[in-house]
Amino acid sequence: KLILAVYECSSFDPTKILLDFSSQVRSMSIAQHEIIVTDSCLFGRINEEYEFEYSLDVDWVSVIIEMLSRKVDKIYIENDAYPDYLSYENAIELTQRLPLLGKKIWLSVSFGRHKNENSKLLQ
Image 1: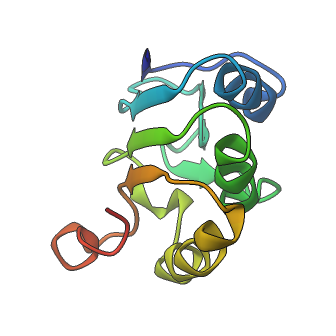
Image 2: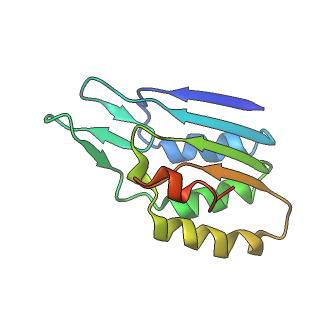
């Protein structure tokens, strides 16, 4: 089991790190904490106006699917600090693509601004 508590992420390719870890362990728990200074986090970066900018070039649905196609079969992602990294539409897409993996998995991710409404969709 791997537990990641992420504040700053200085990697040029954080998705590669996640994919590498997902090849090594069966269970991952990732918590992205809020960043106070201008810096990068796992799911994007904070700009000079202290506003969060999402990694628009990262398809998080495909990253999560790719992670689950490897050794890992349990993933928990808590990203309440920057919830829009994954939209409601992305969550629907995940629910459609996950059964195609053909293996038993457990996935719980926070996403979108309406946590209470979304909490049961991806659990």
